[in-house]
Length: 83
Image (cartoon, rainbow, N blue to C red; front, side, top):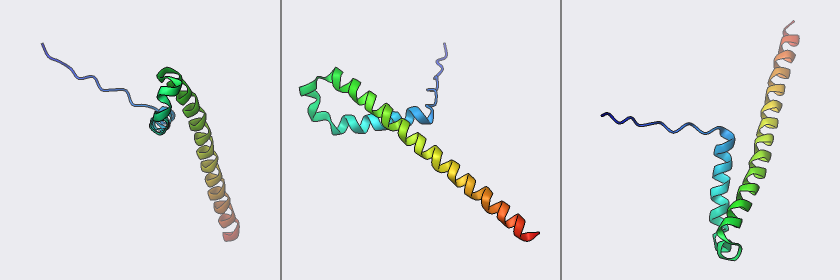
């Protein structure tokens, strides 16, 4: 019988960012685990990482749009100047 290794599905960019933020927050707030409880801390970290990742992705998207607008504006200006 042959054993096949199943490849783990690749995470999307959103989930990857969310997971990284969650790990960093959990590490930074580890000392509060006993005070709040492990389950409460995990749920709060999950909520906060979701909010932060959403905002970061919005900012990145806005920057990319701004770059493309500048690039197209420069191309149109160069085209007008050449005529």
